[in-house]
Image (cartoon, rainbow, N blue to C red; front, top):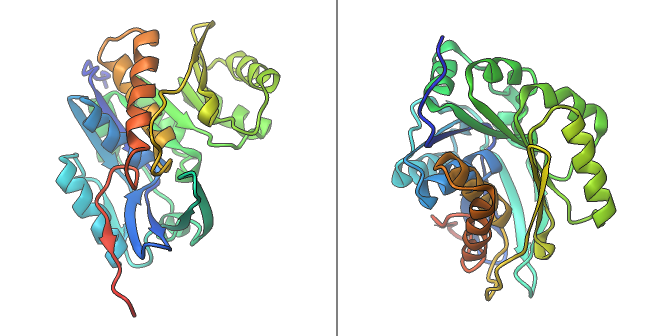
Length: 282
């Protein structure tokens, strides 16, 4: 089938969680694939959708309600009997998140998402797909790549070369969290992934900004200083805004600058994109 000509659209496929703030007794919807889709829409992308698995608990229902409120296409969300993915977090005095534990993805880890023809038709329609290491879609990626114009993949801080080699043939863009890497290690990582045929490689390093390569050309983007409330979702905001900028026809430099501004704004409020749910005291 012909691939989509719709350049200003993005489809997130894969992980979603709720981030439970233990000290506040409330949770917010999140997860990399979901966050990037929602935040791309908020950034101004014309069309965004999400495909994933949610639980039949209150957390899963709240994720769906939040996506409906954000105006995303969610016709291909699956609901299954079991717990939605949940992470327990705490904010330190600087607003940095500290993960205290999780249920390892809940139902989406137990079942894993399988692409059906109707899902692949959506991939074709949207053109650009974003997913992540926490989506457990390794076996589905070749099918997705066959039908997509572009596939972006967030490796988080997982740098195992064998895994990267497995994923690289099915993606066009690779994102990494590189806060634990020094500048030389970032350079080596970018060179290695580019050598595997990936056109765009982005490494975010928290307060040190981002290191980028597109088509063999290097870029560097600093952060935009703000009064930090919560850093949860800042990296996903950066990715969402960058992808949206490129899809909207902006230059790499413009897209990176817009991404830094958008990520900084996310740090000024709780949750990746809001929609808090207060848990009743038991």
